[in-house]
Image (tube, rainbow, N blue to C red):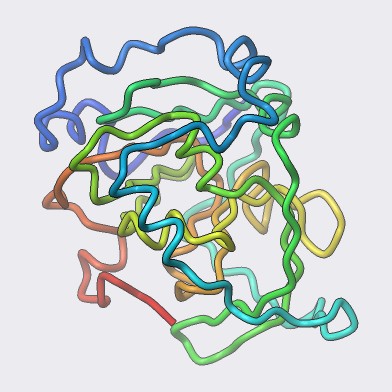
Amino acid sequence: MIMLPQRGFSRRKLLQWSGLSGASLLLGGCGTNLLSNQVGQISEPLNQSLESLMLSQRPVPEYPVSAIEPDKLLINTFDLTPQIDPAQFSLTLDGDVNRPMQLSFADLQKLPLTSMVIQHVCVEGWAAIVQWGGVRLRDLIALAQPKPGVRYVYFQSADGYYESWDLASSLHPQTLMAYQKNGQPLSAENGAPLRLASPVKLGYKQSKWVTQITFVNQLMPMKGYWEDQGYEWFGGL
């Protein structure tokens, strides 16, 4: 159970800005039923523009497990730490997609697990080498099947934090929706049950406690919590 109220933009407001109708976002069936047909078939064809982005990307060099720095990943909290029961957790995928859906934590764990050891870099000047494990975001994108013209991805968190990414960074093979840290279940302080983790973005782009991922054609007036206060939007490394 999510114990904190939502803040930031509402789902309805985001959809109003993006011009998407409510009818287009009706959940097209149970995530479990979809997964039963899709696990092992994540590479189902997408539109050509998405496929070309996926093929053109190169992995960032990773570190050996021996390089992990378990005490260097600092905890920066936007608001009070949400306490979320994984059994009650639901991730919504919506927006301009062919298959809007909701996935439980158990659904996510049925998808292929990817692990990587990368450097987490904070805009405040510190860094830490961390092992993250979870579902590649591109696998979730393949399930949702964005329509042609989608260029941006919005992330809403349980504490009201909000972020937006470019589609190419979201499709990067090392961008994860992580539920493990250093081989152990993710803690609430580090974003459990689900957070973004990627070697191609600064720390403020890597949202914790993600509950909703929305695909849109254009950036909205609210681009991200820190970006709306002057931070650079792309936030790349």
